[in-house]
Length: 273
Length: 58
Image (cartoon, rainbow over the protein chains, first blue to last red):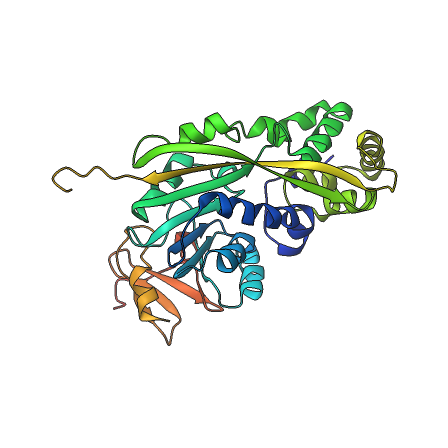
């Protein structure tokens, strides 16, 4: 087995869209509803990927300005084509955001924070570019809990190959829990943080609709699948098929939960009101 | 590039202002001696992708 192929690589738009982007698009408007931001605000989507959250902000929030920052050129290419000028896109890093201090009123980040190597540095940058009293908010999948299609995947994979546990996002990303998110968003330039669960239904027409996106190679689980020799991959496929909750019509419905967190930026500069 | 957009776009390293050089399609940070490329209309604001400007270049 070639372990070198396994990575957290997110580079190309279409395989990502099939695997998890299509579900991310469903979470985005629910997350924005929770934020309750009036129109006319300046927004930054940090780690905008293929632009799902940017598109939802444009559609639902009447932004005065909308920026997307993303490190992957491949994702940005997809975002630029899909958004067609509705967001100002920059290739950049979460820990060195190329925007001026207090350039925006709201910073959001969808399904990204667990992949950021230096989260405190990223949060500090998110607060820096946000105006005083503005909002910083994010959501991540509940990998260890009710992100059920990934949970089933890793539980099946570890059943057959205990070594796979070291790739399981549920174990690797302990920050994707509400108490950890609130703790990350507490202190520093942030006011009180709060979290909520966002549950969506992921419905697959049949087993192939569930399985084929894992063959796209984008993201940890698909990357693991494509690192396996064919007979091992087929064994995993059948092990998964047996454990998924099939409906009478062959479809498979599961819950995908995201945990969302939000906090206002509250600067306490001595000598200023 | 819109001048209003340029105003809030800063060097990711020093957070200082940038000069837009349209002909070269670059955003230049003079203190850092870095020229960030603009590719297909998207500014690439990554240190690794920036061109190191020689001391002789203005």
